[in-house]
Image 1: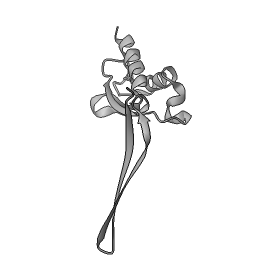
Image 2: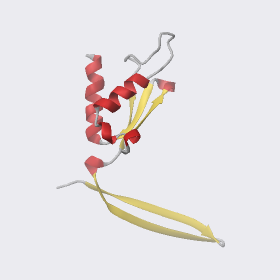
Image 3: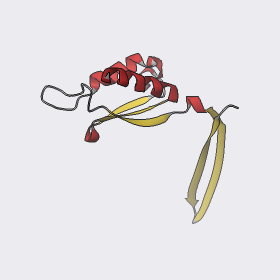
Image 4: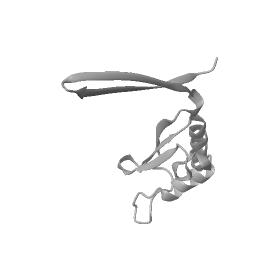
Length: 111
């Protein structure tokens, strides 16, 4: 059995004091290609400058070059990544398959 998700769009607007609503379902989305967001703690990785400032640019570039390079937004793909300095993390939105690759890559730095 294949897992599939449907994108559902709910719209509500007020016109002349009346609430108008509508629902639209789009084609099924394969579960494996669905974009999922995960926060990765990277405080134990080399993401700091000599002056102890959080600077994950090199790690972010390495991830984008190593894990499905065409999938990233800068290459026209749907995957996105952003630093989150408040808890020394990376917020990454990509497919489950890419998350598995990212987790393995980060774990390889920890070994």
